[in-house]
Length: 455
RNA sequence: GGUCCCUUCGUCUAACGGUUAGGACAUCGCCCUUUCACGGCGGCAAUACGAGUUCGAAUCUCGUAGGGAUCACCA
Image 1 (cartoon, protein in one colour):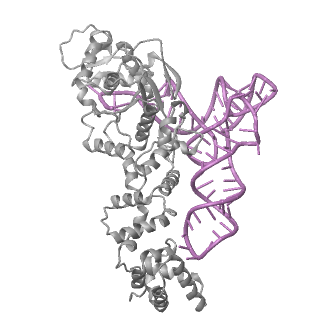
Image 2 (cartoon, helix red, strand yellow; image 1 turned 180 degrees about the vertical axis):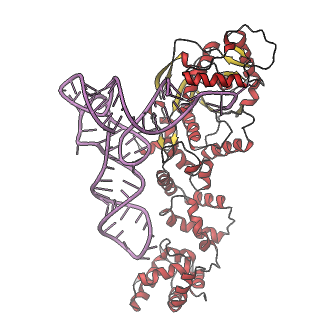
Image 3 (cartoon, helix red, strand yellow; image 1 turned 90 degrees about the horizontal axis):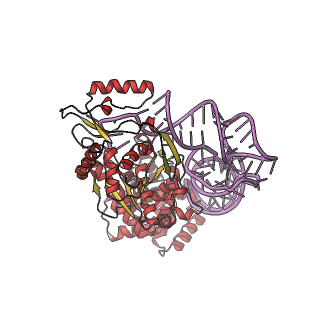
């Protein structure tokens, strides 16, 4: 049997971390089993679905490189097929027309909540003698017996059928609900494994009844635990980025993001196995944890930093230039690329380099901070003397180093008496990468200009 | 409230019923060092609680507490 999985988000909000991880798991499971991974946009609720949300889903999946193997399916376009199934269930007496008005329904809901019994419309047992077009179609849930789901993550879980409510499968405007659409689409798309968030677990017991009535094959279920914020509550806007694509904008690489998402719930013996390329051949559902994990940005930072350090400088350069929309000259490019390795030692996200971009690319860079200006004015002579020394220096890191040391020796100075000063003059900052490297990369001309600048 | 699920260092997690309960991140200390860092070495730190089964329980059973999901003409 060929494995077919799907990621089926509803475009009513952004693609969040939990959704992205669900997509990842579906993708990896399909890859591992030489199967197919599909994406279906569940836009049956036209009022709440937005084009922006659809775009956000595409952006997120594209960035993470977990794209559908085939053309993306839009659920709204399959509407007629869903309706047909609803009427077929009606004809077979597995469903019924319910003419309850909102007030009656509300009364019923209050009552059922009080008594702890599920909603079953009185129309369930009535002989249809009503010509009104104002009805919904409800599924006739079994009244007794038990339903068991053999979930790949949650294990075997059983419920009593009497707790099932007669859910609506066709609304009064004759559009299908998610409960129906999802099942029909999964069948039509030949989905063999349904890997989705645990918030759908309760739905599985209800949806499986439709499948049984229709005599379709029951897919393999795997309900994966949700991701929580650091405070243990459901991940939301309060916890920072709600859209996974925002992490791209913040300077995280997709490799790091996938690696991190994979660790949330899945585990393996070897650290290297969390890399997406290895996970494709190792992923398995039975290694997924049942308990929800908390999102920890520090771990993500650490992973991102590791990936950045293993990447080629040109690649990182591309990422920086693309995200900042900078158009650099060859000289600027060379300076930036030469400094990237120094920055990699100290940053978590590549956008942090942008904080230093000014002094790297701008040849006419000048210090603005008032405190720093005072220091530069006070030590003006010192700056000029160092500049003179550098002027006579052969331009290599070793020569620059010995030249500076020689100057210090002659004047009985210590490095920490000129270090901060040089840093301020050259970068406008008090903390920066190795000063010798900075001098070397900026070049003689720029260094002299900055050291001799008349503040 | 009903139903279902979960609970190992701060976090992510590992551990055929037999381990000094392991690793990673974070944190702390030391070393290195011209700043901030990197790096090296080391430390702190967990089986939610209570019973039971067993020679032996993180692991199996029951109970308690806490947390989560869900109960729409949303998905």
